[in-house]
Amino acid sequence: MKKNIGPLSGLKVLEIAQYAAGPFAGLLLADLGADVVKIERPEGGDLIRSWAPHLVNDQGDAFSASFSALNRGKRSLTLDLRDPNDVATAIRLVEATDVLLENFRPGVMAKLGLSYDTLKAVNPRLVYCSVTGFGQTGPSAKRGAFDVTVQAESGVMSVTGVDPGEPVKCGVPFADLATALYAGLTILATVNQARETGRGAHVDCSMFGCMLGISALQTSEYFATGEAPKRLGSRHPKNAPYQGFQGSDKGFVVAAGNDKLWHAVCDIVERDDLKNDPHFQTVNLRADNQTELATILQSVFSTRPADEWLDAFNAQGVPCAPINTFEESLNDTQTQHMNLVREMTLPNGVQTKTVPYPVAISGFDPIVATAPELGEHNKQVIEEWLGVSDL
Image (tube, rainbow, N blue to C red):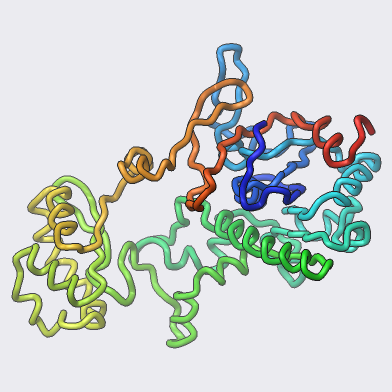
């Protein structure tokens, strides 16, 4: 594997995680140059390795596209953490690492002999990040959690979808991946602290807490009014028109978030009278009367194709967008300009594509390294991290 030289070059990370939240946090660190060694069980490894779709070469060797998306750029080391000898190896690796990232239920790592208290004794500078559903303590701590259950329990699902209608989860695994972003940020902040003080820390990163944290606008609305926010579909509680509409052929979104943009919309739809309508004269009034406003605008938008409306909005500087499929967004000219789709060769030789680290940093072009075969780097990691050829 070609080593990534980036802002986190030299940072050593042990990842003992599977599925999405933990591995995505590890992916972010690997994309930025950290040496992320993924410890996997010898029998099957990370369970996401079995997820379809699989990309198959001419010899019939299959590799999971889902696994590659969350684990590219890492190295795989197989250890059976039920075996005391392999646990001893893991502890030796901890002595040489900066970060341990795990996503077991609370108590599991302690049963394996790999608790934070145990490991900080061998490496006081260790940053030990635990990603769980509900944190390390409390009445819900031992409960299992997946993305959809945390979206539901945190309140996120209650504001997703349309009313009337059933609450729905976000199509992207929002709870998993937003938690990973919190984990990555907090790991780096704590690594910086450890380098300054010589003392690491235990990072207790719960999906439930992160969902409440990222729902800042919804929670602040509840604290201010005492009323739980409602499902609004694509609408905004404080702005209008700020939602999806249907052209004569397909959908699009317009976001006229201030009076100047609203007046431009009125000009485009040739309804100058709406500028002085007492229901729509201010942002707050438009938000309060947005159902009525949307009905008026939709009757106009349905008369012409979406692209014609989008061209008119863009010409006047009104934020707008087509409602794209991923096929359309991945082939968008802006996607191409930003080089957001890169080629990647899987371990079985199959060529595929991936979205690299999406934030540009001057002087750094992220290397798109492949995902590892199970146990591919056993010998290499032991030699490099422990300085021995065999255990």
